[in-house]
Length: 588
Image (tube, rainbow, N blue to C red; front, side, top):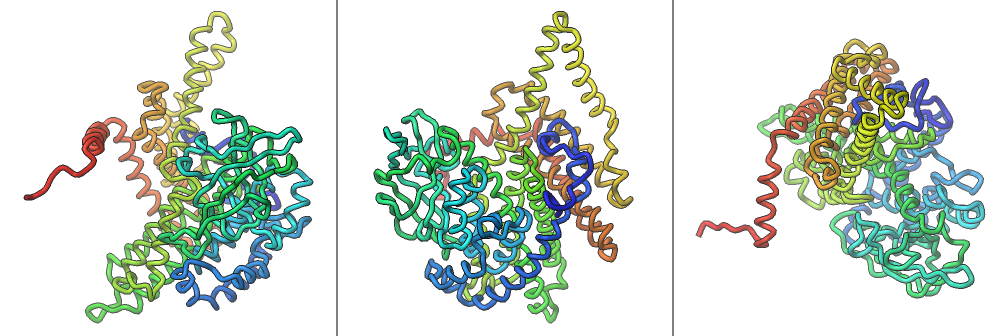
């Protein structure tokens, strides 16, 4: 994927426009999606060497991963080896001693480490994706000069301190406080929970209130060695057990004014910027895990025989392997498209980043489940890695914003734009006699959109870029983008501002956007591969066709669900069970 240093994803790109948000208007920004981006040459050259080195190193620890999972910790000498490999300086600029990989190349590294062990990726990823990402995005020149060289070598390992008891997805509920002192410094008090790298980190990005209980959030760079900073015991987790997860406490910690990260009171913006920018690392790790599971499942299916026949010949096993492959291809296509948006300097990619995280994390969970199933009884035994992959994968839909919260974000971000458009329309109607040029201009733009949706005018702009076999697939996405726009407008007219409370409706909107965006990424990548790897053309078209047909069924079901659903019954059942606190029936 060429991005900032390489070929962009298309001519006439609109870097300030969100592909996903425009889908809710029924519009496909094909110039931002086609052709599929290619990784820049510098990164490709570096990755060729790095991937081999990572494999040689981690292959030697295959047996250790299970032992470290059981012991719930990585030994210091292994952490040192990660330092020696340069894995803590992946995205730090060369000027500060790092490798300066793009987001795309960084995600590819995490894909490689995740093929071996998720805890390894987490130790590296928590440092780079979120722990010290704030310094890269919001740090002053002085802060960068002071910390980045030591972060690049791994002399300092970083962690991200946002979550608190009662303040997970609801970051606004943060209770950790930072009281301003007369000399410009701050006194920090509070406790953070479930902090990855918490027990081994030397530097924390910490979020705290700076204006009392009802005040705003500010980000700080805090050194672990300062008086008053401490961490708790290693948490006994279900999965990713070898990675360090602890509480981190701050008791009257004196933080110099020079360690404020970003602007005072703008910490929420800092946190969201870090999380959005870092989601390709998680997505890359999920893709790497899926690839490893596909390899293992194929080997297992070929080797294991039932009724004197390798189970690889059985249709239901073949179906699982095919579905894992389609899911992996789709996740990979979306994750690296989002990485390209980030690397190319796109100004609005937060919804796309959320989509890639939701889709990749859930695809990885499915792959872990199915590969364990293919392995049968062996899959359930700790002697084999399948159960560890399954346990490790379970955290992905929770990490970095739960998938439920991210679905609401995806939906409401799109609906916000549609609502603003409808508001402009109403305003134009009301004031048309006072300002006819502006009023009729808004009405004309609205009418053009409605006309295009109703007639399909201009909806075939993608087709001329595609192989004939892929053109019918493009029509599917064009059709459902138009239908999504109509549904979004209808639900806003029906619910108005109360749409924020309609989470069942929001989920359908989000799932439609997810299928459309991921499907368009698949289509773009498929076209690129048809051109560059003609020997695999039939396979690539089968992949794109399979994903599209499955997505079409899901999208049709979600569209029907706006009018025909069980939402009221579901709410009634949930209300009754929540009121009594238990399941009310028995057979005796």
